[in-house]
Length: 311
Ligand code: 48N
Image (cartoon, rainbow, N blue to C red):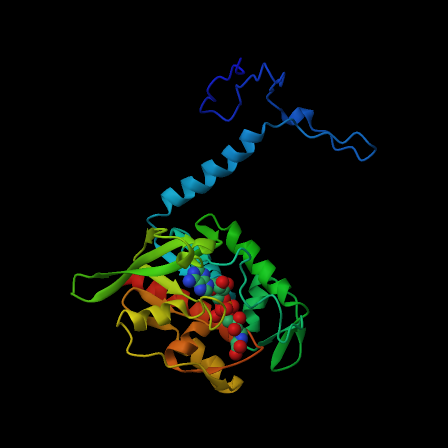
């Protein structure tokens, strides 16, 4: 005889009695939990379905609610995160949604250069480290953070703690929504997304259709390398919004960092480009293992987004 299974109610408390398997369900309470490191450590009881429902309810409610965002930031590298921090702090009423292709956000900012851990930041970008509370050693014209991960983990924790910011990692932007605006111009009006593992495997299955998120402002900071580097810049070329890529030029720290910060802008209506993706778009020099330009570019992208909302 099949075990008598009653339908799970919509609440999180399980109401299933598997009489045949003689499994008794119970509703755990916090009072059951005992933090005792002398051999009597006890967790409050949980039913497996409660874990699934706790995740599913939150994640898919977020997807539903953020289908219409105010700002989408593509890429959670040092530029994207610096933008999210400044925008999220300055305009807490804006619904900001970060889409990051990797499971682990942070882009190239987990190491300083050639897999070495210290991170160099040239002044005046060190002021951003002071604002974040990231300690550094002062070397005069630049400062050194003892481990790049100290910057990246700090800014990630602050960005993710902001109530108006949502991050969807392991999710790729695989196209842009481009529509005609009231002035008859082609305007970027949102992003087309898919799980990254799907986006990277379109050739292995037929027709794994994507999802969409609409927003009046898209900020793209997808970097210059990696499996999807300079994504939006390349898509602009393939959709005819940009004649050709400028292609990143050789390393010149003193030219590249101010060029990237000052050049951060709305490259087509609705699309602001920041970080190393801009070097591919504009043909700017690269700066190599110094990150002040990324922080400044991210903040400039936030300033440009605020300007759009204020006009
Ligand atoms: O760190 P990156 O690659 O990019 P930036 O611009 O934030 O920082 C660049 C910086 O790390 C350098 O390259 C340094 C300064 N070196 C310069 C040099 O001369 O070598 O972060 C981009 C992020 C990554 O996390 C990617 O996973 C993500 O963007 N990404 C995407 N996320 C969603 N959808 C996509 N299509 C996509 N493409 C990339």
